[in-house]
Image 1 (cartoon, rainbow, N blue to C red):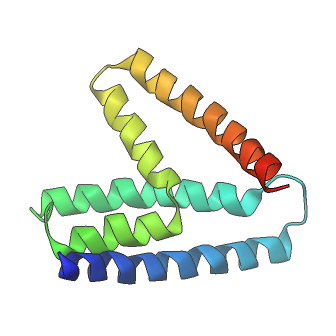
Image 2 (image 1 turned 180 degrees about the vertical axis):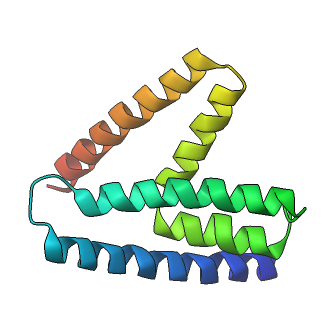
Length: 123
């Protein structure tokens, strides 16, 4: 278990660094109200988690240290939105449309509400 935690931590560190560098690069060239750096990060993260899971499954590495490093660590450190995207994709694949739309709607609504509540309580 400790070894797995180290793989996740190391991957998460690299993912977090890449997220920071993505924001620095994008914000250097984009100065607008639309949060382009986050949008790009989430889009790239969703592509990466799909691509990496596909490669890992194709090569029978679904329960390997590489999965913990790349998927949970790196993609999780880069953006948790990638996990959200993958989970919804899986729910849609299983044709649980109401569940998927409920999860999407509740996640966005509760997420925004929780940010507001946290800000309110902290003041």
